[in-house]
Each structure stands twice: as C-alpha cells, then as structure tokens.
Image 1 (cartoon, rainbow, N blue to C red):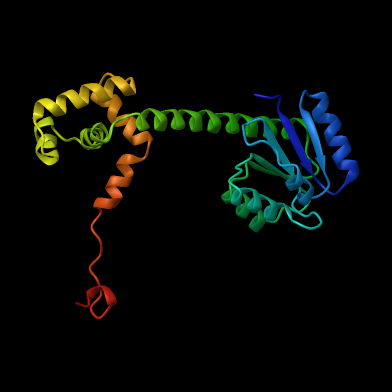
Image 2: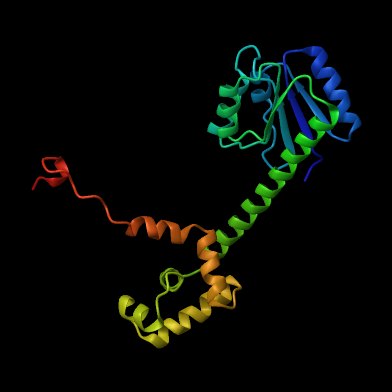
Length: 225
C-alpha cells in the first residue's frame, strides 16, 4: 500500500498551508484542495491509504454534500470533519453517514493527529475485512452447483440423510460432496463451515427469507383472488 495521504479540503488558504506543513512534518503525504469539486476531479484511492480532512462550509459543494457524493460513488473514504461551525445537527448527520470524527477549530495538534490516525486505523481494518470477505467469496465460487447446495444445507444444520432426501440423492453422495467442498474451502470442521456462511451473510439471508410475512389486509390487492 502507498504511503498515507491526507487530503485537506478547506477554502482557507492559510489553514490549508499550515495544516499541510504540520501533517507533512509528521510523515504524511498531503494533497490540498480548495473545494469539494477539486477533490472530485482527482479522486483519492479507496484502498486504505487516503484520509480526508474536510471543512463543513466551503464554496460550492458543502462538506456533508461532498461526503454524500463520495458515498454514492461507493468510495467510503475515512473523513475527519474539522470546522468552525459545529452544529449538533450537522455532527449527527455526517457521523451517521460514516464520518470518522468531527472536530471544532481551533484544534490541538495532538487531538488532530490522534483523529487522523484513528481514521487510518479504521480504514485499514475495513480494508482487511473486505479482502477477507472477497477471499471467502472467491473460495465459494469454486464450488460446483451441487456442492453449493450441500454447503447451504449443511450450514443451516441439515443432516446428510435429510440433505440427500431433499436433493434426491444418497447419503453417501452427500458425504462425498461435503468432503470435497470442505477441502476446496480449506476448512476442517462443521464449526468453520457455519462461521464462513455467517461471515458471508448467508445465514441472515436465509433467516430473512424464512421470516413469516404479515397477513394481507382484507380488501388489499394481495388479498383479492
């Protein structure tokens, strides 16, 4: 991964310059942007190596609007808001939208550096989790359609005999599929198989599909013959 880069988005040139010097002296690479539109023209990499130090009130696209725009693009970059206008409603809005922190100017050097390091640490943790998740998905994609059917049923607690009945095959064949799929996935126990299914969200999806639906209201389109 490339060196950590802090993108400072602020319309105050003296603040951009002084904060940029501070962060550079602390070992960060720095990119300065006067507006949100300028940052969008040179999008940071969403690989855990970039963090945005973002003012709330800037010309054109506001800080919260820039955050929303990045989210819409699927770029969940760590953002630390630093502003002289710390309204509670704005704080709640940006934190709910995924901001890492919300600091009010003037901010002490140690507080600023701690917030930025936390943002990078969380971004690295998310990146690691995403990579692990994608690795699991890749392993799962290597199963044959029948192995995938057996995997789904084993993860939900199905017994070999029961699974064989559902799939119209023998218990012995189910055992063979189970052995092969566990070898392909690199797992050695039922517990590992269930944990893998849980991490992939498969059990939650199944629970949602199995949840009873509320009865249709009499007279509604769903209740009409």
